[in-house]
Length: 244
Image (cartoon, rainbow, N blue to C red; front, side, top):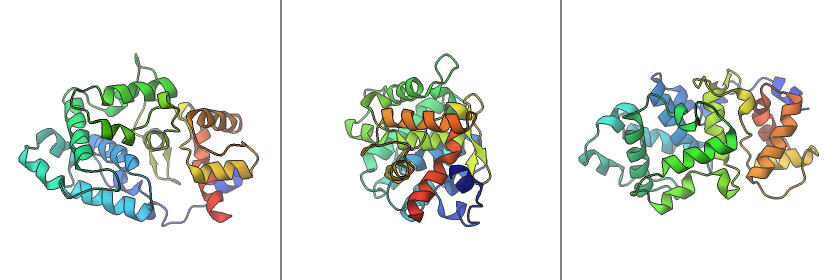
């Protein structure tokens, strides 16, 4: 069933109605990374709202987020005072900008932030990224809820979604595939309630809540089906929940 669902052509309008359209609208690698990460972190609620809010955010950066982050002035930051998305507010925006500025002043790509001695292992690497992301005395406690970590047994749906976008290259789902040191086989499923319900209906799992242990269990099942690219079934599971 999953293969049949994956083989089905996605609607032509899929990318136009999905948040993946935001990073796909950029060409500079760093712009793609920044917009993909930020959009993924905002990815809860209705997709249209996520898209509209993300577009509004990057318009405040003159649609050149990498250049803005590296070269903004303190005065420039005032323009974000009235932008927010649900619980993601001004304080969180300022810290994201602070992190990206300090990171990109020393690194070319955010992919390296997920590598430990040049290697990627999902649980360890995402946990490492979270620690480094908030490795600042200025890190607001409230912002930590917007970037998940397996160390808290979170499903890390939005981080896994970001990695899926960056690692896989797939014209069907729009995945961009600009990260080269992480393999598709190493990714974990972006698990949310929709995917959870589909997996339960298919008899793959029996659970009521998403968490990291469940992400690993379900991803291991998908690895048996598609060892080189288990996460290609992400949209299949999401779509099956919508069709029931």
